[in-house]
Length: 158
Image 1 (cartoon, one colour):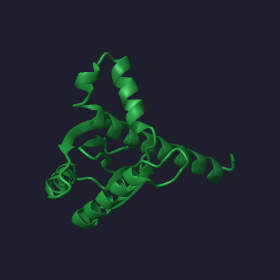
Image 2: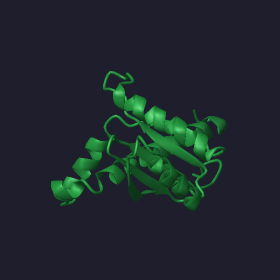
Image 3: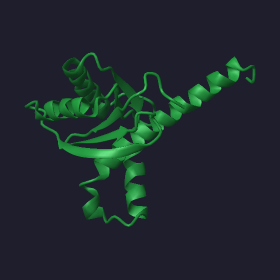
Image 4: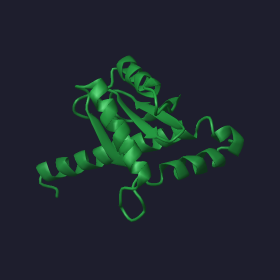
């Protein structure tokens, strides 16, 4: 399945201390970690770095993880992610910024790292990237699923 438009997507996991960044291949099949960027809310160093990564990877879209509560509500963390996404969108326009539900991405990333033998202390350096990978891979898989459903309907299968 090829996403339209074809090209790399970036996902970011916005935290209060760090921002995880992940990218995918141009065909939108596999998400991989890129970098962890230090959060600088009072300056714009984090925005500048993420914008530079968008340019470097020639991203066609940026997916920001939106950490809704388990009751599907927007809490403080979602407000921070939305605020960051809006500021980033202004900086990287015309590259669109999209939002994707990421309620459990950090927990999923921590469990995956733990099961692969990464100790808790070492996780701090990569868990944000792993969460960004989880956000992006989930988003890519959802797009593939939607495409498959639409293809089935067009072929009279659904």
